[in-house]
Image (cartoon, rainbow, N blue to C red; front, side, top):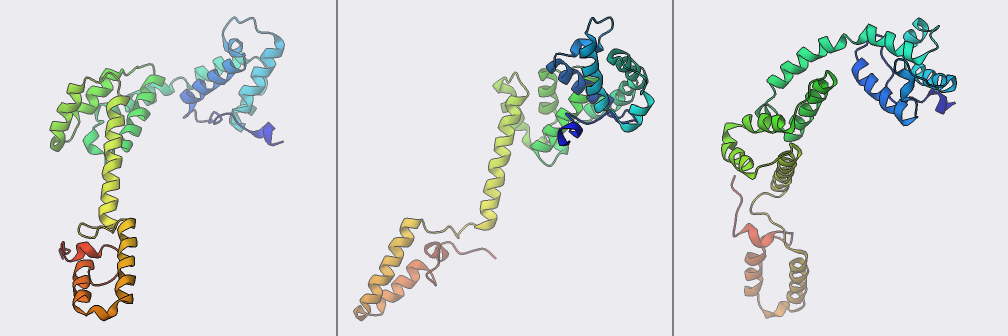
Length: 247
């Protein structure tokens, strides 16, 4: 029963708000099932293939739409009726997508990943409405909206001569990730509190055992040891006295 109710993609909402993406998904899946011709006008599809396509399309309709189009048995007729009803969504989505594209700026986002997500969302909407955005346009949009503090970086990226939008974005994402790692390392272990390497810790512990077994050699060395390794035997002692924390 679970297979009967499983959807390949989101069902067409009765408001038609997801019509454009629904059309794309439906076309792709029908082609994959070798049923793409069933929704084309004047097709020569067999009655069996038409029935398969009809079952598939109805399965991906809102319950209200299933009732409204209950008597239609030809997938091409259903497809045309839905197009007449919802194709106007392009006139609703396109102006908003154009506005978002016009005002898209890298400097307005907190992270490169957020900007990248917005870029693909907007360009996808434009493409669904029939307007293609080229890599050159995406590159120029990115370069021209760098923050003023990164003007040198912008120049460097332009000089590299990238041809695809994905190339500079990949570089920026790597830089951003590395900066996040450095920041986390600094927050968890501020300057001056770098831990001993594992080998040094072992050596340090060995020296403590040596001095403990040779306590009769005098207290002077004990004081020297205290200065060299810090106030305790914890990690990072050798740097505590040399590079005290700023408070």
